[in-house]
Amino acid sequence: MTTVFAFANQKGGVGKTTTVVSLAACLAEEGLRILVVDLDPQANATSSLGLSPSSLKQSIYEALLEEVSLLDVITLTKRVRLDLAPSSPALAGAEVEMVGMLARENLLRRALDGALDRYDFVLIDPPPSLGLLTLNALTAADGGVIIPVQCEYLALEGLSQLMNTVNLVQEHLNPLLKVAGIVLTMYDMRTKLSEQVAEEVRRHFPGKVFQTVIPRNIRLGEAPSYGETIMDYAPHSRGGISYRMLTKEMMTRFGIEHDQERSSISAKTEGIPQNQSSTLRTNLWARRR
Ligand SMILES: Nc1ncnc2c1ncn2[C@@H]1O[C@H](COP(=O)(O)OP(=O)(O)O)[C@@H](O)[C@H]1O
Ligand SMILES: [Mg+2]
Image (cartoon, rainbow, N blue to C red):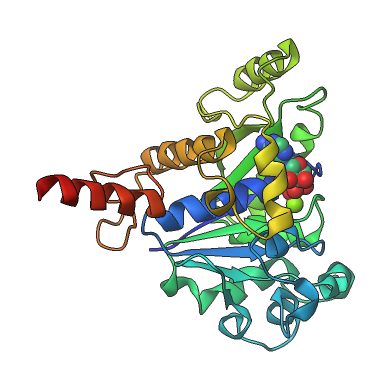
């Protein structure tokens, strides 16, 4: 069974893309097979995963609007078990082209059909708007929507509009759609404001907000410019550690099991990145000798 999550918030710069690529890398590390779908014409998820949008022959655009199979569009990334359906600048015109199409909100769901059995999870990164691309993401999201909320002034602004959209899609297009979780991002421990915003969001959405809060962390801001996820760029940074904690919390909340056989994290070395865990293993081995 594959679960599809959409990460939506029509505000830009709230940490959607960062959350998608970081969680994708962490879940892949847990042995799960992950597909990231970059639905944003700005293609930040694509470049954050080390691919250059302009050099790709095909993108999600062709899978949505031309008769190209999603399997022909999907590309591997540097991370094992983490594949990407990349975006391209062509996607910028997609919403206009979709308007006249039949079942235009179902294009992504249909495109995903033939690829789902290859993955445990699909994480969709839509653009910062409530247009047709985001509607396609919500319609395909049988696992629900996860909403990243930035711990800044006016954080709640726009969320009621997003909730209306979620309710409409749930009623008319995807009965399985629900708010699967809310992630507080860019939390600044030095300010009272972050704390107040976090409290307010928790009050507004009881039971929905993940306990793990993502701090404002410079490494998270730097990683995309190296085309690396935080798990490669700075796994021990506060940003890296908190996304790993969020992954664990998500796995507990949704009953997701760590894949013992495929995972690079063995029970003994849990939470220690691959290169260090091999050092650890070598040390244990040396001591035993
Ligand atoms: N926790 C964080 N700490 C510091 N910078 C962050 C954090 N999360 C995201 N960023 C940076 O903030 C900017 C916006 O984040 P992004 O994930 O692209 O948001 P969105 O996809 O919602 O537009 C990016 O430059 C990103 O690298
Ligand atoms: Mg983005």
